Image (cartoon, rainbow, N blue to C red; front, side, top):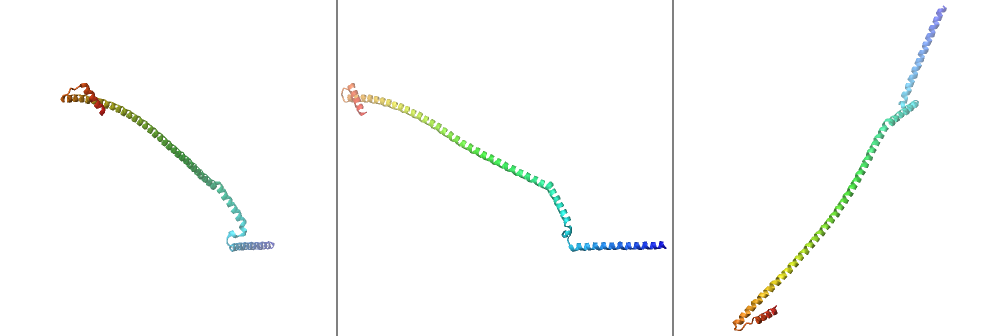
Length: 205
């Protein structure tokens, strides 16, 4: 009898425990439904103030990760590209300045060479003119000397011809005068005829 009562009491306790567990499960399910309903009432989880600390934590962690990636990978590459470009620009500017300086030096050298060539050409032209003038003066002097010598020679020859002609004329005049006197029946004195002819010719001269 006692054993039956004990079994009955145990069975009743098990039923009570089962009912309590079922009630707890129903309560948990109701709480879950309430929480789900609350979440549905809030809308977006990002606007739930209860999750802000967690969201802030993950946001800070994401920012730190992004910063590390940028500072360790992206930014060095960008800095290297910028440095290389700056170096290229600097080298190009230096090369342009060098070419500009070389062009200025070449222009100065060309101007100097041109000025030297002009000066040398002017000097050569002046020397050539001086040499030509000297040769011309010398040729003129030689020509003048030759002309003077020819003139003197010609004058001497003319004087000689004139003297010979006068002597021939005087001789012819004497002979003619003597023949005329003889033809007129006079006695031709050779000395007198010669003096008369010489006096006449001398007076005409």
